[in-house]
Image 1 (tube, rainbow, N blue to C red):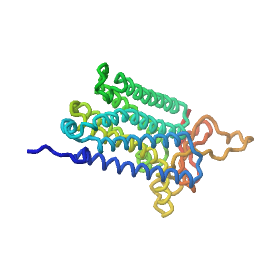
Image 2 (tube, rainbow, N blue to C red; image 1 turned 30 degrees about the vertical axis):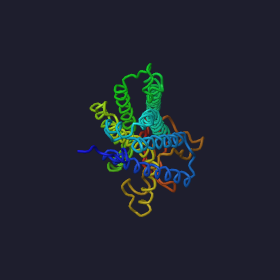
Image 3 (cartoon, rainbow, N blue to C red; image 1 turned 90 degrees about the vertical axis):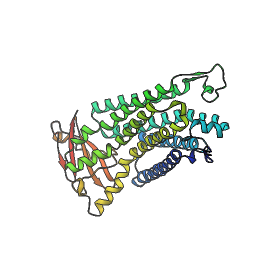
Length: 356
């Protein structure tokens, strides 16, 4: 029986084709989401916030990681068994090892930036001090993890060129297997913290139960990212390290799924305004209690201040989250209200206060 020819390297394998097609589809969806996000912000004339810059930077690294992975499949050999790859394409070994080396840095940057993007969005929405302290703490953990991932990528093999040039006699590498497991596990814990962070506040909103479920569902899409990360940890734990070109096809596509789905989730609150606003105009916006009570892309807006001479109407130390709808589509805003008014309503909106 003749050995397989693999005329298209990794694309000749089922794992390589699946990873290639999946990544292409994710890139198309991600790019469409970016275009729609820019269109919404331009149409609404919204000021570009810090989390928007983080999103755009994250998009660049997410595309970079995905492109790097595609190159690893073709003309690289992700999906092929190592012995077949070395038999047919020995001249591609060094380029493939460089792809693996670059993926460490691209993944670390992409995942860190998307986490900081989501946390920056939460920082604009939620103004309670304790929540903001948690946001800053998780942001610090995310930045530390990203920096450690970059440092490990630089230091895991000495000299650095030994990552792809195994002819260096004095070169040596650390345990990349343990590094991957540790990094993925910590990353999953941080992602879970980000997903769960807004849930307690959102469940306190005074609105129909179905609306709460939808609102929390939008913020909880990150659970898909956590599930992808967990699957990757299990695969890394059970992988055959001696046949890394074969196992990296599945690990790589899971990394691509994690990065790109996280980026798509970061755009979901903004893009939700398109869907809900159209429903409201067509008379089907009752899922949030009518067209005047729907969720926004979570840009913060100040309500009109009360006259200074009206002491009773002055805002105090309690933070009010208001969910309204208007020409801007969906809107999540905050307003200080009188101390002790933990729950209130205004015309065309649903509100709940958070005591500071």
